[in-house]
Amino acid sequence: MVTEVALLLSVALLVTIIAAIFSKSISVTVIMLFYASLVLGVIFTIYQAVVVGLLHITMFAGAMSVMLMTVVLMTGESKLDIGNRKLAALLATITILIVAASSYSLFSGASSLPQSPSQSTEGILAFVWMFRPWDLLILVIIFAAAMIGVVNLLSKEERA
Amino acid sequence: MITDQTVFATTATILFFLGLFSMFYSRNLLKTIISFQIVVFGANLALFSSGLGHASNLMANTLVLFSIVVGASVEAVALALIVLVHRAYGTLDPWKIKRLRH
Image (tube, rainbow over all chains, first blue to last red; front, side, top):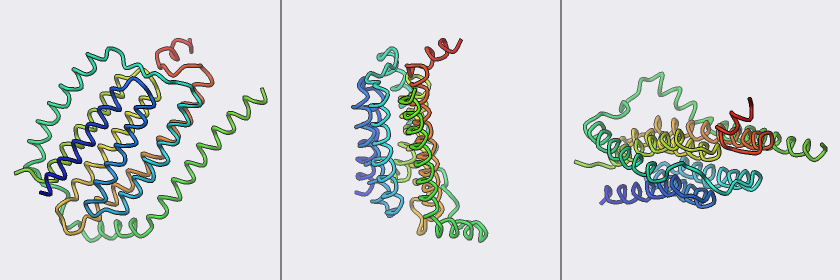
């Protein structure tokens, strides 16, 4: 039952990403990317990582989608050229098949991250987890810097 | 036996390589940034799936948090650079930009 949910969410994620990659219109790409961010956030949230899921949705489905839309409107780029679409689709299908087969055989028997990290590693991780608001602060600073850069650029153009 | 971890790890790998493929194949800088975002999604899902099935997946959650912060920051700066490039050259096609520079 749980695996069915995982399969369903994974298929939804893959479908939205493939639609985003192969769509001709940039607005469709941005919308599909928004849905993909939402699905990934839901995956994190369902599997007990609520903070990570909410941060992911806020960051990618919220802030990054708005920033992408802003850039699209500012640059006026509406069409996305991906070259020969049939060839691209064929190559992507082959990539998916090869990667799916190899990664399944790789991950089905492989061990994951160590179950009990060493005490020093655990201490560092606990410290990082305790001060996770700093991550948000860094994000806000970088977003503000990027926005100030763009505004400065536009104001220079208006003056010229 | 298919587990959630296997499903998510496989999906993450597909996402990563699809993003990488699209990044190299696209002829638009905006599309390259979108592909980079897909690669980040793949990396996030791979990190997250590595922590599934354990009582405490603090390590995986912390790494995903870091990955989200780094990915979003890089993307924000790259989008600002794209606006700059568009103002300077009037196009987002890397080949045209390369020609215009000479």
